[in-house]
Image (cartoon, rainbow, N blue to C red):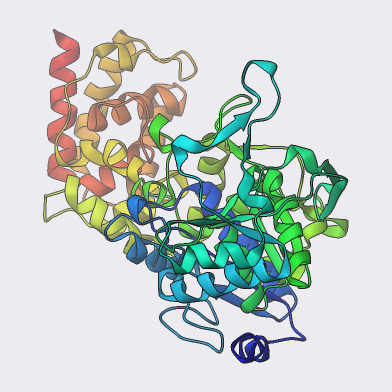
Length: 495
């Protein structure tokens, strides 16, 4: 018992302690990121500790490089951990496979306490109740009733075994969840689950309980798919005589009303979103509101920094209802974040993308960035928005017909023919001088400004939608290129 007493003595007390415990099985999906975020926010809100634990006991599902993805994502998102494999801490190791010897000891201790038993059934020997009767299938064997000493002798003789949880046959188990309240299940509906496999490795459900206790975890945040396992967790805590943590089960993130988000169905991971040009700050802000709502004076507020969330986050705001991931809402939110960036910050993010589509060294990329910043939702939109700058695309004359601007093919040709000498005679080539000259031309021709500006915009861009107006585009392209494109537009309309 000295070993168990020493382990108990290591456990920190008197503070909120939360953990994010991902399995290194690939990418960080949106639901995982939300769990990490909520877990971090609870710790920061209460000035507690946030622990990162790597759960790698399911060796068959491990993906090379996945641990690096976890570290990279957490660092990018600012979800710093106080304890973990890379920073250490008082209750390490923080990689589950490195704790392997612990679980065997605790499984055997649970057998001594009567909360578990040695099972020597081979799979072919097991009987299951249920089947066509429609009852819940359960493991049934005589091992449950074996005297402990007899079971130990069989173990010492080298007989293969697993250790199973001893679930009471009678009565009920009630657990409390911060979101779902009190939930009661009949014990007869629960199976004697395997805690320790024949290879000596723990099952996920057992390792979680042992590690959470030994690391002093006070709040366990996880998906609502684990609600059905919570009664078994409670019974394990009670059998050991341990304090039960606060459970916070989060409803799933859905693609639509019927389907969960899934990588297999093309739904984006965090990495995918960043690769597509979303800002980390916008993604975190949006994910925070997927299933959580602020209260009081912040009830209608939508924009938060991470530090602001840490000040107001309360688990009472977590909803029981599934949250639907709306990519259009995220695009809108990301666009708002784009607008708030300083010009320098936006250029730093946009420059690598702009360089892939604009190869003309005469083009001022900073000027392009300034033009598109308030008109850009995500960075991956940029190539399609600015590709005309490098080369005028082929386009249909139908673009010149614009009902709102009151332009037709005929008056567009007339406007461009009138615009050409004005551009050729302009000595100062700026957005302001261009605008003044063209507005004066419209007044001289006795037409609306749009009758002059819309055809010019189409001629220099070849697009119906551009990141700037006609004069802004001309200022960017330069005098020689702008005039050449206007001449090309006149030739196209004359055909």
